[in-house]
Length: 66
Image (cartoon, rainbow, N blue to C red; front, top):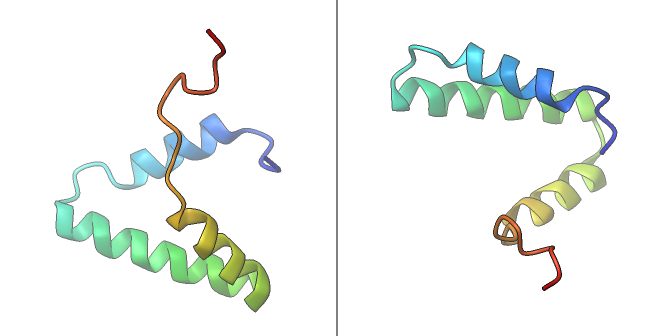
């Protein structure tokens, strides 16, 4: 992960949506995604990120060995 302080970013994201309805939160997320895509400015990188986001997320603790 290339973000230096992911917990701070996560907290800022949650705080930005505080008090929003579900519909407002979805609009916010869509707008943020579009702004970040524009900031990235690389079609291939965005397409790869979209593909990665569609992949199932491993369940918590599934990376642990028995």
